[in-house]
Image (cartoon, rainbow, N blue to C red; front, side):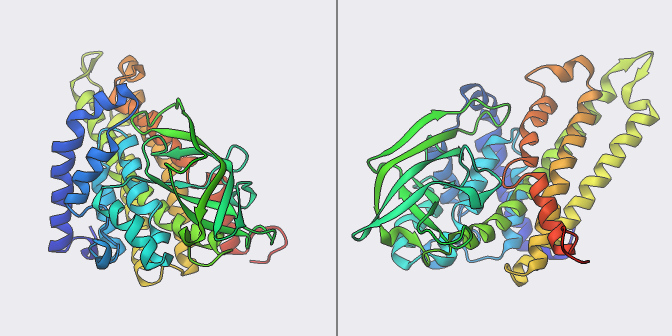
Length: 391
């Protein structure tokens, strides 16, 4: 482990998160998975009381003012959770819907929405994807038009994590007729505002314990002071917010993959086939060694990305490496869970198998927060290999 991620302060944080996961999350995961939802307000309040939802956020709003290495450690330890949905929802609160607000929001806006989110008294969500615009963020259609001192918002958002329970959403909307990359703004929308409709909770392949909603906005009126930063800068802010999201998501996957490998070692050691354990086969234990090596390589990549992020979050190298991390992560989680599941035989094909749960949950990694193909495009752009460009 890199020395920068293993100071006494980092290790203390790891221990705190590990104890919390063991006491407050894992004993209830099976019930939350069955219910297709976890109690976000109750759990987030406990996290807030421990100071875990504002690790990198400013002190004046209740945060700890620490750098991204601590946020990575927090995310990595969340990978201990025995499902993907709960850590993803926590990640949305800590690293996906709040970075732009903390960095560009006015003092009044941060006191009204960021401080309660850090304390775990409000649940947040991020509203970017739409039925016709997922990875193509520039194509969103939700619009916020000025009327007096307000914005009036019409449109819809899809795949919204925490959508059924959130108190506010960090919404990306078109606020002018300027070109697509300069006509968008991030706006905080309280979910109890008239015209906000939580249409339905989506039934998903995995991430069952995380509520995911489709939300409609019909003439929703909010004051213009709820806008984060300058009008028209929302696309750029959201792209910056994505970097923290991609680092967080990759970090969460590390220990989740290691759990799948360790669970498989334990099962394969005890499973007898043709007079010896499955683990005794060289092809099996060599394969598990290969998978663990790949996990360590990914850990090194995301650690390096985080170190550069700390130095300058706007560095183009951060964008490239965060995209590489997410691309590698999305593919590796599929490889690890698929390979491990094979060694469980018929047991691996049952719903309540821990590796089968990871197999379902982790498939989202190659889709959410920018699909693999989008990551490849970003990487190609950084290399100068897109059509019409010279390397």
